[in-house]
Length: 163
Image 1 (cartoon, rainbow, N blue to C red):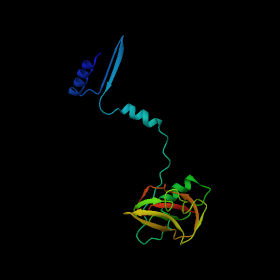
Image 2 (cartoon, rainbow, N blue to C red):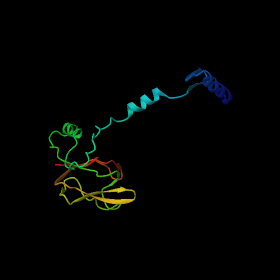
Image 3 (cartoon, helix red, strand yellow):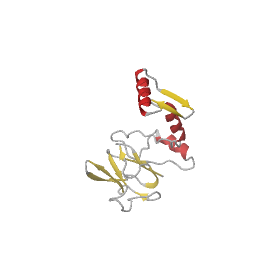
Image 4 (cartoon, one colour):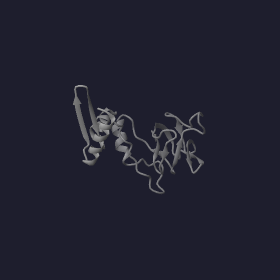
């Protein structure tokens, strides 16, 4: 089959709203698909790894203490790690980009297992080209990092889980 024949078949498929065409001969075969390939997408999705349990959070109400753990996150965290007691979280006070250190390649402000108090700088959030140092505002030990370095964060989003 030459290119002109294939082009005519494609034109006929488009004119008649045909999405699949398969033709076999002794010297070869051709399969043409138009539009969305649902079977191909289904196959691709079945090969992807299962997503991790989503971290649910609700923005902290205005004036709420930052040590209040979001109600939606507590059951998810409890089921994921039943042996570890869920503690307060450090929430983002603004929308911006989260950074664990003061500059690329520098040592992070805190790591899992570090103790923090109300005045400990835990990260930087860049908002409108301004680097804002974020303080823990609570006492505890860092149990989990909830945001990747360089990722955007929303107001009230949990950044760190304490124990």
